[in-house]
View (cartoon, rainbow, N blue to C red):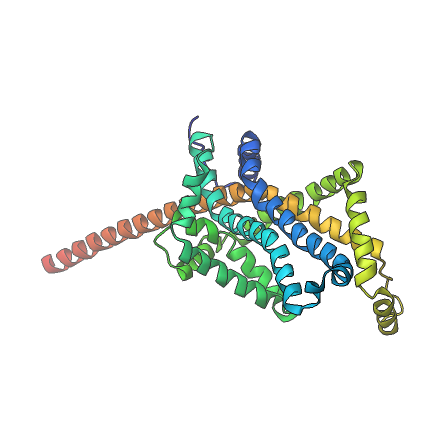
Length: 331
């Protein structure tokens, strides 16, 4: 397949992103399955086994004297949670790596129309593990600051300016962590409104519309019902809903009372949201990669033209100065 011509146009970027993602949908989905579902399964294993163990602990203590020892109880908790923790941590790391590796895959799809050799794309990131972890540390620190209400507006603005930081990290490998953020800001400068529109359109589909559709799928296949049957009894047993509701009503009489059913529904929706946004991460990466390349080409072209104009203007100025000086000498 011929190399895709990247144009600095939002509609072309969106259409090309959907085309590349759709053409390689099963390949991208296969790549994202473990990073996404592995986290869900790992957490489910941790909390599920812990809940069963907690429920059975009184019976175990009554029938087996060894469980009357605190160290035995703690040791069993550790043994129970280790398998789920290992699965979760591996999936979580793969998910973080995907933020960089998917950009390399997107470039491969742009150039050849195909995506393959996942280890090679992962190696683009894992070969710089320390630097990549440092990048995520800075991002995590910024996200922590962004949770403070006073910084919400600033966080929203800088989120747009730094949206291409993973693309810069992937394709400009000599840049430092600071340079990655600086380079992203330079690319977005002058293109803030268009970048915001691009991200807003993609987010609408991947964070809302697709999630709503997946939630309907959960309901039709009775997955929601099955999860509710697990969450509701646990919530009823472990959370003091009556005390919390009474406290909130005293503060705000219009407070909508929470019930185990409502909270369970929130949990299920969050699971659907995480799965959908995780599986569709390649679409967002493709979109940002195309936008990065378009802006890089545009900025480079603009800089070259500006230098050419400046150079040409300087030569003309020098000729005029020489001509006038010569005329003055002749006079």
